Length: 244
Image 1 (tube, rainbow, N blue to C red):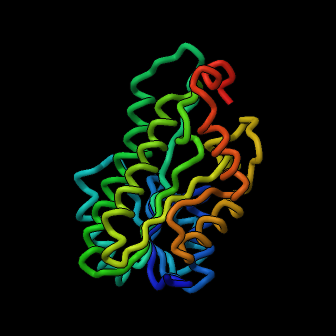
Image 2: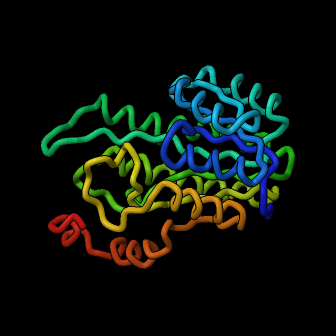
């Protein structure tokens, strides 16, 4: 597996883990296409990093525009050795709130748009018999907690989708990596009191290490592995009462 990548696409690159990944990839010599909805933030990053970063403003829910944009990026970037899908939203959901608009936004941004982008990358990499695909999932996808049902569903769906891609593409020399961070200190988690919170740089370092090693699936930090093993095996009746 590659220790570095000549070209990379980062979707969800304007802040948080995605921005940190762009910076770290550029520092390692990678030419990066940064994709996100907020053009001003992309321009800020490119202004600081120079011509190693190409910026592409895009709403990931514009599925019809994605194929042409992906083709354009690959042509202008000069290839696609790595693609990272990092876009995600997690609006606050109150107790007793059942807001389909919020649920739809989470499923579309966190899961469906990821499938749209990564399907395109999969088809390209299968033909080329090389490449690395990475999706940023979450420990939130391990069980269905009562606090935000759609968010947990979106991350569980992403984890399963990436596993299926891994099973499909491994025979073609394509690496598919599922990164499952615990809580990360980002604008999305601002104000929340969450255990074992890490910085965006720590999350990006862990994710990039997995990508370079070709690790199939893993937790960031690794301590979440045994914790999630316990949580997955808590009987449903007990989990329902504690919601750990």
